[in-house]
Length: 217
Image (tube, rainbow, N blue to C red; front, side, top):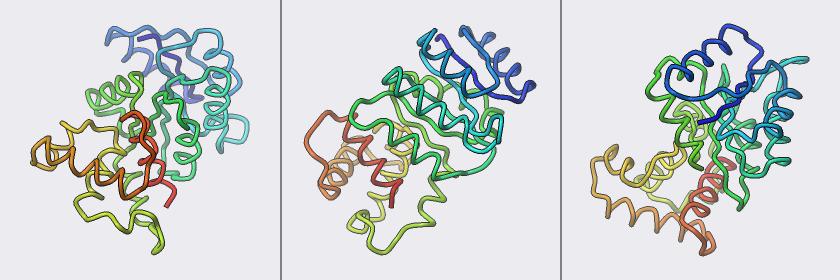
């Protein structure tokens, strides 16, 4: 894969460059601020970009805003966001850029990079158009559910399936995690689409819409 990295922490940035290069990937740009990220994405049109949320000058949400701008200029460009903390609103803003156009999106805590195989797998899934959310982000989303949320009609098992969908897992991977058959997962997914009144469309589009509904409530 051809990859752009944007992180102002030099040690982490160079560490990612080395890790990805040794894993057989090509880092086409490694930058330290949001403007440089946007320029690199437009110039190189990478298979995926790895972006820190907090970058200069204010170290708040520059990375996120740059990622959103990059996706505006290069629609569907895959973005994997890394953050030191769980910042649910940032994840929601970035996921909102998928709309119906697809394009891989991921949001992981930086600690996840230490689990190299897990991190590389997440990167491949995002590059392939998938949606990957850190389990801790998913957990905090559950904690802030409102009484009137559209997920209230889902059964506990359907909520489990939707949470695993939000982590970017395929139906087969969900079946393994829940120790059920692929057919059972497919039935739960169909029920989720029906209960959330998602319009008939491609499977991937409806999965993204389901995750967006999950995040926003």
